[in-house]
Length: 385
Image (cartoon, rainbow, N blue to C red; front, side, top):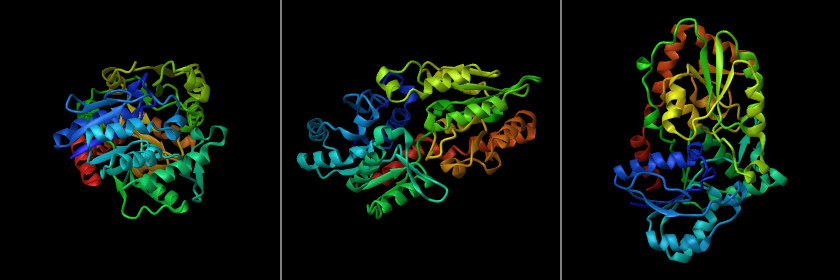
């Protein structure tokens, strides 16, 4: 099967912070192992040497990625690669890809991967546009572009049951019939970030347990609430390690949303909180996780999936999480919380109750067993066939 994989990269300056690029980098070799011929069209190459590469321009902003497409380049790519399947990882680009397929005279199947949902649902099932994509009131336009993308696809892939449910409900409300298009294919875990908890060194007696927060610090990730929880959580038993995934961002990105820098500064002055960076190095990232005791999920209401949560669990770290979105689907019920006080209590129990910790470390590790690249690649190929 010849696959043309169209990948938008939103963070070309720090690829290790771009989950879409990591996904492709892990998946492309596994697809090749399974016999697929993959060409990645992106601003930077992904996968091993077996994956073909066609360079595309960096869109500049998240809105340009959704509202602009180079049709001439798409047509040329399709004619050169002659794919049997085209995967659009920016779902809003699917109508342009369908147009390019038409112009190129190609009957390739068009697959859209809902890597990011520009909406979520409230507890009473009200559709809510994602605040991160609502600058100047553009949220509704992004939502409509997403619906148009769904309509243009032959297959629609999502990460999780939660994401599939939300996507199906949103499509229905916008009169898009998904029919039998929808498939669930999770992202692969990074095999470099896998450690059986039985192999983890014991924590030294009398030392504080380190909780790691390895998520983007955008306001729409619920970072303000995390800052409040961090103030309450740190103490003799617990200290926190917060990952600065972006470093210094381009001026164009900070102009749209400066909340990561603002929240980083707020966290940096809290006692018991350490701001660290992996500098885009996956070995250093692994070491920072390996030295931690547990993970903390993002406080993001519209969370359909989190690669950072899987990273922690693959390393045998229990992850505590708010009872929201995919987190409530995936995280062990004993580690879910509703209030800040419950979050603090869970962190302290993981720090002080060795038996409780050991049980949940094993469960966390086991929860990633179905996310190996080989298993995900098999599901992926079955879904797009």
